[in-house]
Length: 231
Length: 315
Ligand SMILES: Nc1ncnc2c1ncn2[C@@H]1O[C@H](COP(=O)(O)OP(=O)(O)OP(=O)(O)O)[C@@H](O)[C@H]1O
Ligand SMILES: [Mg+2]
Image (tube, rainbow over all chains, first blue to last red; front, side):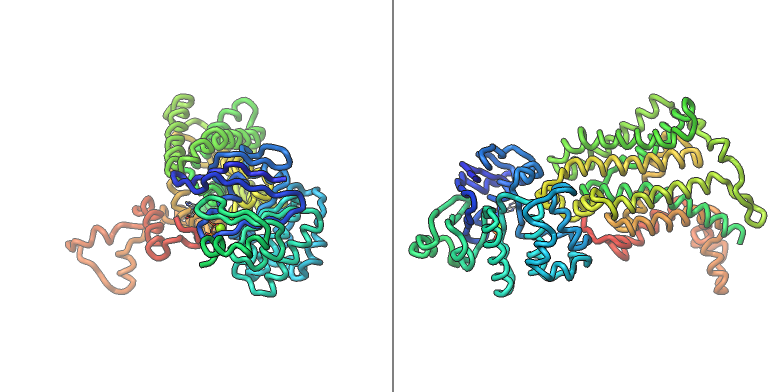
């Protein structure tokens, strides 16, 4: 469904990604792991078209490497950044509405679905999104992207800094997304939820993929975990 | 009292005019991070376009067409100028708008000459609206206020009640996120830039005939608008609003007040000898200081609050 080949990315003069290759199949949850600064966020920003890059990005059989970010999104790719970037002065409801690409868009997720999954969003619907807690903002960002009815969502460190109870909520939502037929590319630093919910994992180091395999293969491979994951 | 009432009204109408300019400048700045040096040039173009169109079609069509034409020019400037320069950073963008300022001034010189043009208040509005005590108040000033308030009210509704308004508001905080949600942010930038220029153009149409339409008007108004935006806090619409009205009043009152620091000292029973070295400075009247007063206030504000009245953004 998503195939990235020989991806190089640059911030000005600094060369960050050195030929990344990865694939996400239909209905799959794939995790991209690595330490701070490994280049995971840069990889999804490059796929999204928000960083200077070279290489090929194919999505649903179409080359999207040269498209502007909003066109990439319109192809059905969703992006939840690690900075969350909720619109603080707008209400929760308005944030969700802006997730839709057009005012009339009907997808597999409705505002009502979101409210049922996360009742707190309904309670806060008319409040400015900026006053919500970190966990609530994370729910809102995820839901906002879902309102655009993406086929594949790239999610950057959704559990960072959240309480264990909220982490379970997020993991639950990711599985619900998979059940509704979405593919997910999940960026994480810790193995916690990645091992539980993903079908395949990649490990990144210094702007390259250094491991690819199934959860049990990663568990068995102590050398990769020691060298590229554990601090 | 009479002086006070008239000055207050004049200050208000001038302040609203300033806000037509500073609101657009502020929106453009908060969205793109560019301080558009040529913003007041679009004000000047509005006045000249209206002058020209009034000759062919009359004032009322000019009131609508001139701002739209200025807005289209602004949008084209963003699309084919700024957007190309953008990738070289903010300094390049600033230099671009700087150059644009001189370019527009030269073009105005070429087409309309260096002397002021005879752009007049339309005859239908050239009467006295009402009389306060013994001074009559011109109807055109009332008309200016009505147009400004109407326009700003529509802008407010557009920003808060429509989908495009929400997209604009969202782009103020996180343009990359808005784009990642599938909205055409480059086009939103173009619309906001064009819209801001159209507001400046409208200010030129209604201000050019109330004041004067000449090639120096862009520089004169531009510096005041700059002061307003810095004083109010870069990027804050509310700050720009308060600062616009404040400087509207300052500009109108200061030219007419014949008091000096000497008078103030007098009130406290202090008198200064004519031979004292301080005498010349202390005897400067507010009216004499009027031209530097805005800059003085701006510098004071920056000393007290470096971000301006309501600014949050660091630059
Ligand atoms: N805007 C930027 N300008 C210049 N360099 C950057 C920028 N963003 C990231 N980098 C650099 O690129 C490298 C990869 O960063 P990236 O954000 O992709 O890492 P990451 O794997 O997501 O880790 P984390 O999110 O924990 O920081 C780092 O060395 C970082 O310093
Ligand atoms: Mg990251």
